[in-house]
Image (cartoon, rainbow, N blue to C red; front, side, top):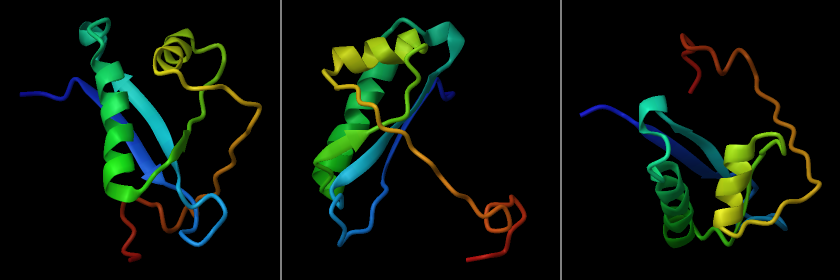
Length: 103
């Protein structure tokens, strides 16, 4: 009855752009007392399958630091390749406030 793990994926490029079918994937977290049961692995794979089937994603990228051994191992298990890419996000603090009325 409580949340024990989470994973996210979203399309992050303009639909008419060169990388239109790439999705961001990640933000995996598993409650400490439930780690080791491969829940994160299952949710990670499920997030990618859902994006592939429902949103046309054909490639995935994530921001994982090489010092994050658990995430690197999970990516290795999923046969994901590492790269030298870096990601930069810009967020408007006014539009992202918890009390924002912007639509």
